[in-house]
Amino acid sequence: MTALLLRRLGAMVLTLAISSFVIFVAIYAAPGDPVTFLIGNPENITPERIAAVRAEYHLDQPLFVQYALWAQGVLHGDLGTSFYYQQPVSELLSTRLPVTLTLVGMATVLFVVIGVSLGVLSALGRGGKLDSFITGGTTFVNSVPNFVVALGLVSVFAVQLRWFPVAGEGAGFAERLYHLTLPAVALALGSLALISRVTRQTMVEQQTLDHVEAARSYGLDTRRIVSRHVLRNSLGPVVTMCGLTVAGMLAGTTVIESVFGLSGVGSLLVESINTHDFAVVQAIMLYMVLAYMVVTILVDVVYPLLDARTLIRSDRS
Image 1: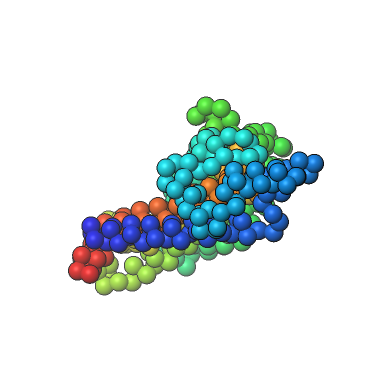
Image 2: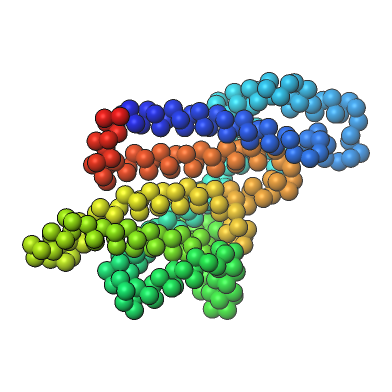
């Protein structure tokens, strides 16, 4: 288990290093001269000003030197300074991250609890009306883009019924939960459908295995068979899919935050791209890569604990 974790951490460090270089190069490979965007007002574009900006942002250095200086600052917690907001990027992210993390956390609770429950009910009633209803409903929900779902929720529950606010994330913990309810539902619906389908398929496969048939032949209670033999052995693939879904959510809240007017990382990314705020874009892209890798590593650590056979194989290797 320790060897497996060390290998995963080593792979994470290597992937993060490669990703950071690709992110850095891609930003400065975008069309246009970065100096023009950094100076802003065309009237201020003079040879002296251009030289000063290039020196300030190390743009007069070779590309690998620029990357090394930027990476060194990142390792020391210095993500640069936003020229649009005129404040350190780390401080800017610290004010936006809580909104995004709370949104993803609420959506995760929704799609895990409801998605797994629907999958279990669908598997137990396989071939029946309930199974057909759940399968059809989740298929329909999964086919609708989340921005369409978001606009529909705003129209019905915020504008017409006025049960929830139209936009904003609120102040304080309780008020924030209230404001983020509709965004969390919109973010969770597509994932809820996916988790439901995965849970159903895995449980259907488990129900046909020999040890489950043996448990039935011994006359064990159906609820006990489902909880101890079917659902428990289905948790591995379900947890893996949940982890990948959460990782995708951490990097994919842009549309939902834009629709609901939330001041999160996703909306900040859109603003920074529009204003060519390179330091902020680089920091957010790096956060998305890091968040995805951290979640996937946690899944790799948890999965062997759910399946002892995987743990034995990893120890032998």
